[in-house]
Image (cartoon, rainbow, N blue to C red; front, side, top):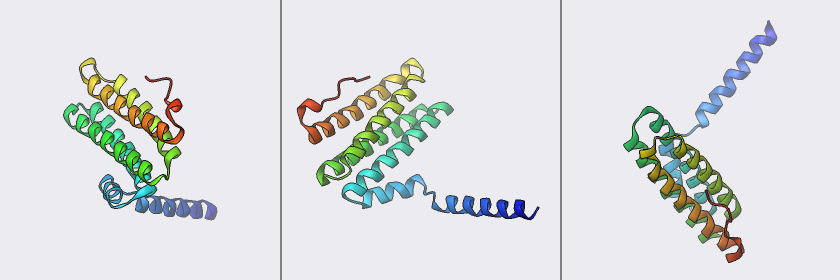
Length: 150
């Protein structure tokens, strides 16, 4: 019984620490806007991922206009992150990987939508893929252009 109580206490303590560390999207956005270089690239792509998850939730709940505004935030912060990585020369490979995963997930979100709601998401996916292509060309030259685009 004593072991169970101590386990429960430890789990509650860890849950409290996790909740205390979890930042809101607004706080993450503010940190992203205030940072520079490789840190900005990393934070911007974290915020873009959160915005994409929020857009997915908004699409699911039927709030298409707000979801499309979130998709535009995803693209804006993906661009900001890619620009920060390019200008600083830091986090280039990590940014490219995160952009690829972001585009893949955004594509999946878009394909789950009704036909009339898909085009803005497809356009956003193309923009993120172009950012990724530009980053790859920056890292490895023109021969590094991605071969498969969805």
